[in-house]
Image 1 (cartoon, rainbow, N blue to C red):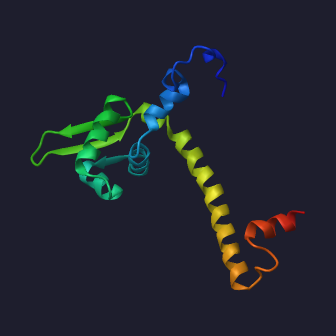
Image 2 (cartoon, one colour):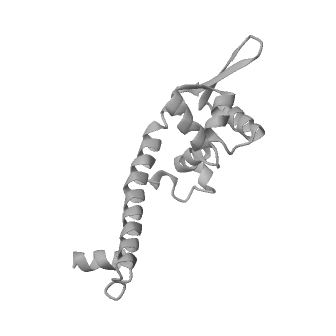
Length: 145
């Protein structure tokens, strides 16, 4: 991840490839929407709304319009009554999959470790071993030494 070509020329983060990537993924809902589009390939508006659950109709609509404008998703409208609209990832949107997969791998690695440490902390407290170690981290450090 070299920023050498941008040295002394960066006025803002947006001037860098990293900043551009952040603008495509940033915000509260973009990654959530992308996640569900990866899971379901093609999804209708109401189904996407149900999957996300806590997003308002207006916010979802705005996010989808912005993502379509940015070229991340494709909106297909069918001329029928009632109206039917489906969303799917574009090639540009699919190109973000490696980033999302890396995020999942990171989450698996650190979420498991956090849960393991919490379980060990609970076990230390449950066995009244607090006199020996104050936390699972201390116990692990002791074991590593």
